[in-house]
Image 1 (cartoon, helix red, strand yellow):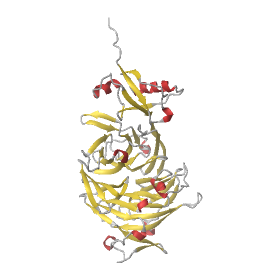
Image 2 (cartoon, helix red, strand yellow):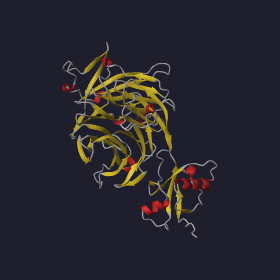
Image 3 (cartoon, one colour):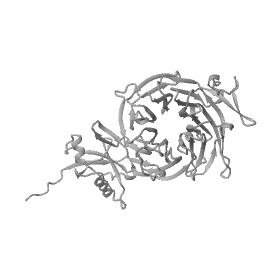
Image 4 (cartoon, helix red, strand yellow):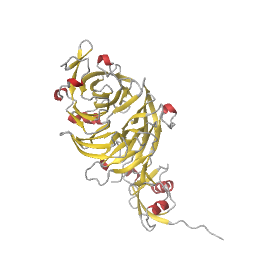
Length: 478
């Protein structure tokens, strides 16, 4: 006659950084079965907290989410069951749900958000009239137009046509500089600055051209802005990065060799309509070191005199902007297409043509180039946005037709060691929320993450899509 072997046990000490779910102060370590997984641990915390309605929790050990039984974790990390495990618990994230989609006439290449939490609003240092529910969404389209939307999917403003100061071909990138100023970049080789003005809810807002910036010799595919220093960066397929001033008075004259062929030699302004002309300016400097198209550029989060750029030449470069000098180059194995900073981790994330995201330590003192690989997409990763509420969160947009939500503490082990795995996958609502193997017709081109609005993405399906979750990227224990 045989009897069931009793489960082994391990002592755990449960802690959290979230005061509203903290255990009573006199709660010590607890002896639990090693076959416990997340669900059983979640039940245990709810019992100790005496919650009438159970709250789902996630658990981290040594900064990594528990995705197995405690027994498997102990075995994988060669830890004795005699050890007391310190386990951090956080409220489990609620998957992002679809809130709204805004339809366009053509592909949508880029999106940005103006809200009380957005960088443009914070830089303005003034109260924004857009209370929750009154935020603004900026979209850039292949039809050559910018559009500003309210949260009820109404277009509040559209940029003028090419004959009235607008771009003459597809717009690839757009950003709010402030609540009243917008920057855009296009395949027409220009960067443009716009004034955005709202009068009242009953009247349409106005987007009017303020300045045209010339200096690139090919399509401008990405921009980054830093309004406090009146600086803007652009990345081009001409293999260069340009640094610009957003102030007309600080910007040099546009080089004649960069102006359109039909421009009168020496002209400093372009006539827009019967009585309006747009000033034309050149770059403060041109940063040349990449050997292939530059795909993305950002200002260093804590130092606007430093920039990072990625390129199809497989390299991440660090630039000293005052001297226009590349001070460091990190070479990888694949073409790099997108870029976002994770400043508290001293990392930058780069999307690749190889369908994964590479986390790179750009510091010259870093012992290795690649800190981690995040796998899950099935096509090129062309846009990235850091979670504004978390040290560890990231959203990515891919040509596979999905956005994925990541927490770099969520890992699994494969033949190459630990790799990051996504928390959630967001499909295009136009395809019924289901991914397509090739992404044809639903490729994602742009992604932004706003703490109030949610994850906003732009795509080949001619839509801006808004998804919002809860507790995604919960803060770590401090």
